[in-house]
Length: 261
Image 1: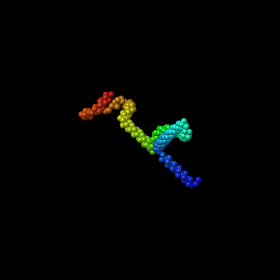
Image 2: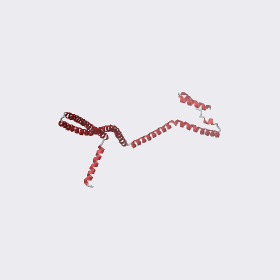
Image 3: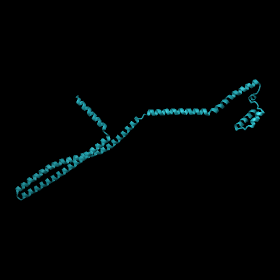
Image 4: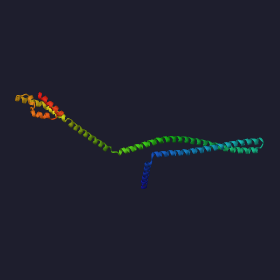
């Protein structure tokens, strides 16, 4: 293959590629319908022209038929009058018109066939144009949908969803950690007093048993060992003289009950 052939092929390939890329389906379809409608106009004009020529041929044929019949009658008239030469001239004229009429008849037959063919082509072209318009609208709708989908896919492909999802996962983990810390703080703050009393209750059984053992060794009762020493009258007077709160009153009541046990 020669150098110029290779260059020509490359140029043609690039041109075809540029044309393919530049083709917009919607514009191409619109132009195709416009071209078909222009062809329809040209075909209609051709049909109208053929019909007009057919009518002129029919008129000429009819006129020659009339003239041939007229000269036929004149030949008969001249012959009845005994003028044979005049009758002969009339028959010559009649023959000329008859031959012309025969030629026009053949021409008229061909024109009729041509007009009918053009009419059939016109009907077929109108049907194709109607079908093309319907198909054009359908293809244009599909083209628009394809363009919209292409733009959507291009937009989606440009979005980095991995980083966004990673951020969601990190934030979810952080929220879970915050919830766990909040729950821990709540449990520690809400059960401090309960734990203190639980320790007292758990330890009271051991303390009672220990007091009982001490009482057995010393010969006194556990109740007496457990009771606090009596206060002096001076201390009681000081306590009685101070204003007592509701908590102090309740505490004093509990002490009195312990003394009676």
